Image 1 (cartoon, rainbow, N blue to C red):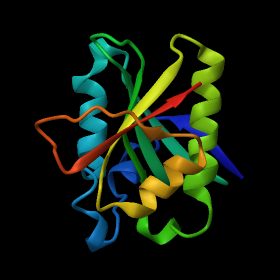
Image 2 (cartoon, rainbow, N blue to C red):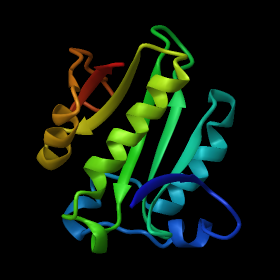
Image 3 (cartoon, rainbow, N blue to C red):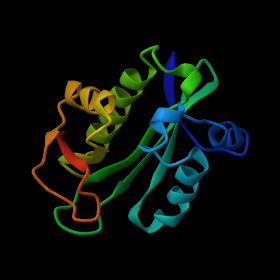
Length: 150
């Protein structure tokens, strides 16, 4: 059973050990970097979300709040470990994350920046209502900025 959890002393090393397939490494930061970003973006209410299945750490995500207009949630990283991919964990976890953000209710949308070449991720986000926001970040012209209204 998939559930979302916090990073703890007991699970952080399992989170840090997560990795993706070689072909996916260009799309995501390493798990240890995701943990570090949670600290770095602490003033933006960043939270690292541990994704568990029956107590086993299967993935990690990072959500923070935008510091500038338009205010909203920023899903910065979303990773399912390579040995757990293809089992529906990513889809289930994304649904839970969006449900949590809706319940929290601070903002009316969540955004994610996805490399255009990461078609599997784009399909997953589209399944949950994300669409192209039309915004183009000059620093990452090979990325698609997607938005989902909560």
